[in-house]
Image (tube, rainbow, N blue to C red; front, side):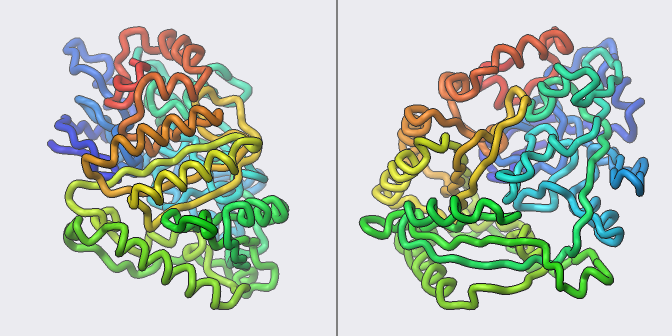
Length: 440
């Protein structure tokens, strides 16, 4: 069957295997007949080719809730459970997931494999810092429990390891108790990139912060942006009766014509968005679903970029080089006229001990581009800027990074590979991405 990631590029032919439980999965791994390289696949929300291989092991049926500890506020569940399903369980109890990405449709296994981050990394770190433990199925068919205290080396290789050490079967997630699931949001206007940085630095005590950035604005408007700061609302009625929200979704039923996305339409959209948002109320209370998952309200929104798909380019730069480096990236992008509807800037806090984890102290910017032949030279040029400023590119969003760029940005790749070879000496777990960047 033909499969692809959320960016719909690249596409690959693969055999999809859907074991109904861990024992069925063990039989697949230990069968005498070799079926070739394989990789686990959850909800398919990684953007590029990190969950593409000759054989895909679906976690579709690993979707059970296995335990709940009211005192410790932890939930144990299968790797195929989505973050949205966890919210359904924890919100009525006054709990919340400590780290949420831009979509609730990510699976738990995928969240660990990509060590996902959210709008609060500057305070709360990444997803795996809130994972108490997980069960990992090795290439040998052995099940091992991994945590920061048990099988530590394997834990730090698997968190952010893009599924290359084994298959995550289940995990115990630490939730946090919150006063409300309603979000009190405050918006700020930044007319330049330096203003945006100053405002983010001045509001590091805000629980959540993110900036929408106009990547097509040039000259004295370079980096103009809207910043959204947020906290859980202590005065909300949802304190008394917290409820999970399930919005009705509009759906993009067909691929949009790619020619409609160009520098003129993007420029008009960005102008309209910026001018509208800077005039509206600066403070408001919104539902958590609106703040964290705005695009989840549009089913199949990836079709907006046309049948050829799109690429998301997300990178991080250290604090001392971020302003200069991101300015250079924006100058190059705006000059090429290949802007993005969705350009998101966030501040990262400290890094963790996970070998291939993406976040590091600094700033991360993500950009979406429709796929076209002329895009790839531009992205190669952006790679040069990122590496020159001490940064790296996010594996969960990547679809075309070279081996040299990867290894320059992830200095602990050799240590990761040592651990992988210990638990997967035959290289059973491999993806198109891992082959491209030299990890398999």
